[in-house]
Image (tube, rainbow, N blue to C red):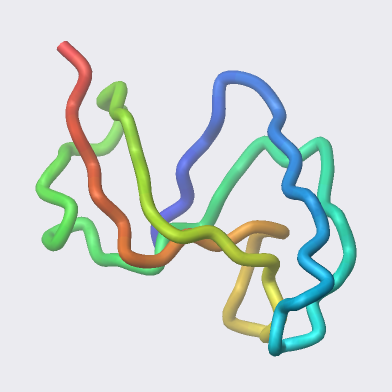
Amino acid sequence: MLVLRLPKPICMEANRADEAGLDEAVSGVWAVQLAATRRQLGVAPGRAVRVSGTVFAAHTGHHHTPIVMSEVRVEEIR
């Protein structure tokens, strides 16, 4: 499991049209679980990165942070 630690907390608005029924907002989140492997990302731990992807609210026991990101793309910040 990969977790991205954030420099400041974020929030995610509710999505009433979400098919999974995840219609609650999430706030004060300091970490996001990445649905990818370290090998897929190709970045060493502890590096500053810019991350983009698709976010959704955690909804299973496999999700360890309130927000999970899939289709992850990472760019190392130099």
